[in-house]
Image (cartoon, rainbow, N blue to C red; front, side, top):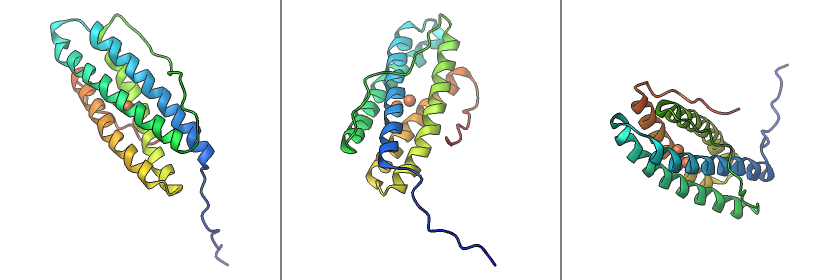
Amino acid sequence: MPEIEAPSRPTITREKLIDLLNEDLEREYQAIIAYVNYSQVLKGAAYMNIAAELAVHANEELTHALSIANHIDYLGGMPSVVPKPVKTSEQAEDMLRFDLENEKETIRQYRRRVKQCDELNEFALSESIREILMQEQDHLVSLATALGVDPPNPGIAD
Ligand SMILES: [Fe+2]
Ligand SMILES: [Fe+2]
């Protein structure tokens, strides 16, 4: 006898989504701080273009933070006030690598979040996160370009 599949139930709850969005918000705060710092600290003629671009990223990350905080409030949660830890370095290349790693993780998480919002029929939220994702992918590409590497594929979070 073929097994009858049980009707699919959401694997995510609204409470869990609030927690995950708060992690996203903490990553956005982390990105704001890193980009504010690195955009001013990066030295060397070779890095002047990317330093200016990092200042643009800082502004975009603030817009993301406001948007995610708005979604958390909409879901009845309390937006976090704590950033994830920010790494620092004296080396320009290290700073860019830290940023690239953070953008990879951010994209992995947002890819999952789009699916989770859809699962809860929160289509406006997933649409908003898709727009953020587009900018995060631009960030990833500009960092990879500055480092002279191919943009990595971040995959999707479990
Ligand atoms: Fe962001
Ligand atoms: Fe970003």
